[in-house]
Image 1 (cartoon, rainbow, N blue to C red):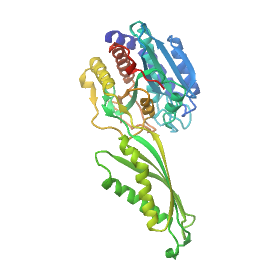
Image 2 (image 1 turned 120 degrees about the vertical axis):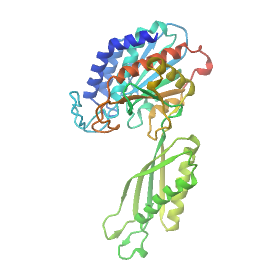
Image 3 (image 1 turned 45 degrees about the horizontal axis):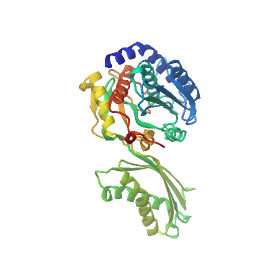
Image 4 (image 1 turned 90 degrees about the vertical axis):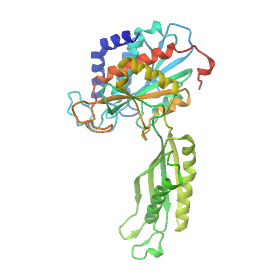
Length: 402
């Protein structure tokens, strides 16, 4: 079967390069993926899948029915949105949309998803159950997965696979991780209320800017001394707003930032922990405060058994020397984690690092990929899907319902 999958992937390789370059030239921002969705729907329909558009606002679902009575549903997810970045790659197929670029590789994700659908469509007679392809919008704003779930895409799903490109891994290699792959990412807003006064008489005022600096310092110091260092927390304040003039002591400051963590128990403690520190600091100097802690997406926790399937598929397809077990998770966020509240899943890193040119990081205006990695992703996912279907029979224990 692996040889057959590789042959099918090789046959459609030129078409996949065309698809990727078309998508790269026509990027669309989160929630605006109308043309991308229409294009994806057309490719899926021409491959014989049942297609539903407008799922999760601008998402697309394609379903491939196998030849058997296995009631499991395997989902494969690819995200489609681009970033508000002006491209500077000088590629012939660079973005034609000013200020919008596929700088995170979602054009590759979408292409790989389409390639897997094409390959598996030719092998439907060997698949005993249903494969559901989720082409998701708005990953970059961490909303699309929730939109898709709200529209029922995880009904009856028993497992889900996903991928993300990674420029620090050589093109054509695979990066896998058991357990935590990405961090939970939450939003934090702190308002500090003091009393205004003349800059020459600070003792007559309550300086909100100075107190805000104490809050930031105390939070950072407390992380290193009150949290388990084996369960990391990263709190970053990215915005500070306050003050009206150089000689007026500010009476109000707003701090905005993100809080990232890997463990569910640690994450649950963070809102109270942060508010206690803010309260103690503000109370010490006579200020009032308001803390708004908003939970974002949870951590991606890769299922052990599904990751084993992916590892076996990748090693059989490409050899163990092209498969890396990643030693540590990323503290970046990924809303693939939302699906994992409904079914076990695993996400892998698809190496797209260039052999000759500098490898710019994700979200860089000169980010480029090794396009040969597209076939690596297609074969790996298609073969992993085949191996999933060959493992075991349907039971109520592996059927997840919304």
